Image (tube, rainbow, N blue to C red; front, side):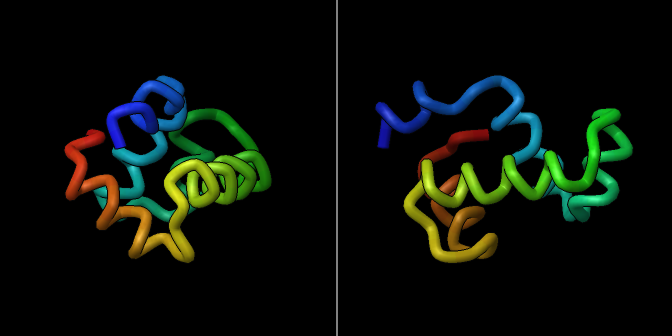
Length: 68
C-alpha cells in the first residue's frame, strides 16, 4: 500500500481528510470552492485508486494504512 500513498495527490488527501471528518460531498465542495460534481468525481477516483467498493471500505483502507 505504500506505493498507493505516492499516487494520492495533495487534493486527494485533503478530500480524504474531510471525508474522515464526516463532511458530505456538498460540504467538501463548498469548503474547497469546487462543484459537487467535481467532488463526486474525486470520490469515484479515490475508490478506484484504493481498490474500495464504497466509502466505508475506502476509509477503512485509509485508516489501516495511515494515509491521512
